[in-house]
Image 1 (tube, one colour):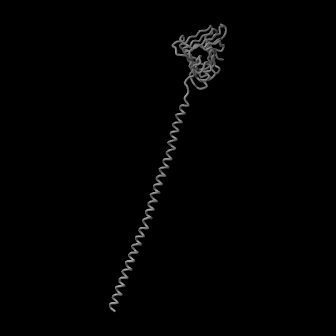
Image 2 (cartoon, one colour):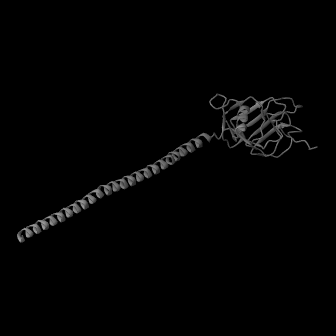
Image 3 (tube, one colour):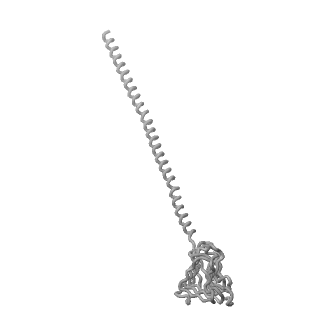
Length: 249
């Protein structure tokens, strides 16, 4: 009986140890399972965070690049437009005249009108005898000049016409003035009793420099009103009214 009891005790002890081992093993497996079940979750989360950060960074970089690109393009376009505008607004500094057609105009009258309409202040006349009378229509200041000469005797431009109102005259009372330089004016009217001005001034700020005023009639120079300065020039006409400026009313 004692032997049997001892045997039964051993069997019970063994069973208890076996249960204990099983419990430990289960516990270990359970912990292992917990660990292994946690690892993929952590890895997945980490992967998600990395992916999210990378995408966010790339998106930000892309947005920055796209924000910068239009500005750069716009800047480049602005420079190009500015250059084009600058080129487009440039204009000639003088209107040119030549009898042989080698310049912009063959007639001085047309050249002066074009210059005044375009706010160009200079009309350059090439050598020749121009058979026309000049009528200043606009108010814009303009300089009419022939080739450079040191005296009226060397002038290469002559404007000659039988003009009772003047070889050069004005059709405006508001002229801001003209400069006539290195050009000779000849009124070809031959009657000694007729008024035949070479220059009829009507306006302020007139300058005749290195010119010859010649007339076969009366009043080679006449003025309606205003101020005219004549320098380094020659004047020839019939007496008694070589220079004629009527008294104001």
